[in-house]
Length: 201
Ligand code: SF4
Image (tube, rainbow, N blue to C red; front, top):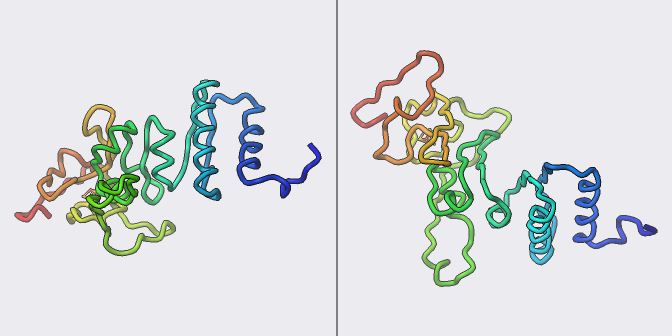
């Protein structure tokens, strides 16, 4: 009670922040990058605290983070966003084992694995180019400037979140070079339709 904020450790300050949020007895908490400022041991404590609170208080928590290891640890469902839009939404276990959207694949492939043997075998999916400015995002599918599967239609149509398999949705026109089925999976604005040429462009 008598200490100033600087008198607490990072982990203590974070627990105080969570306690303040819980004092209002919420059913739903939005935690925006709650662990980014901490070292690994405090991050681990914080994630365990989130787990514990979710279980004991029956809380629902929207956990926003760039740290995929943390997201995987605390989440039941994961939504992956690119430039402010959800590009894939699935159960945590499902999205870790099978990603549909090329951006999700690149993200998951970048997560280090704790097992040295598996880590050696890990194959990174490297994206070309820099991320576009969120102030002036590309038209159509915002990922088309970096997507290895992009076709001309991707710069014109905004793909809708489509159920690819039960409980797994992705915003996509194609997910591989063999999947040029634009009409079947993309939401077309108005009545606009796209025809593919021989190369599937
Ligand atoms: S819609 Fe096109 S650019 Fe966007 S992820 Fe799918 S293939 Fe790539």
